[in-house]
Length: 135
Image 1 (cartoon, helix red, strand yellow):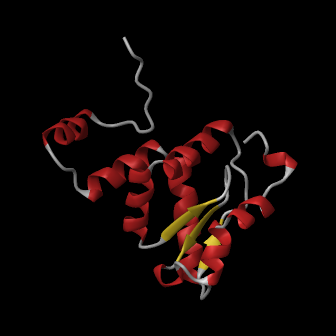
Image 2 (cartoon, rainbow, N blue to C red):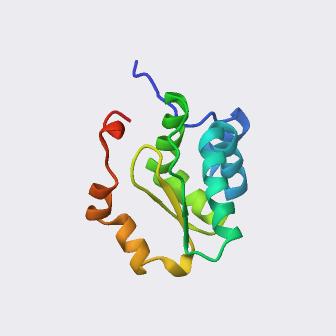
């Protein structure tokens, strides 16, 4: 038997609903929020910082305190469905460079100079350090 690994803790009622058909974003986002609390808190904080200022981006530069927290952030941002759900919920574009550097951009900034620089191969290389090699 193949072992199933899980990114989310899906309540039985939500799993039943998914087996019957499409799921609304609100139910999916609640599952993400409850399953990945560190990732949720990090993205929420970055979005709040974006909304509080006039800049086109806000980003997290603080490494996760534990490997479990790092795993949550990686699962949230590596999943197309989770990342897209977060973007729709918060009304932002998320970008991710390493084990903790998540940025939120205003939709109007997508494809602007700062966004392109952040998601570029050069931006990725310049954001590296020996401390991040094992994250």
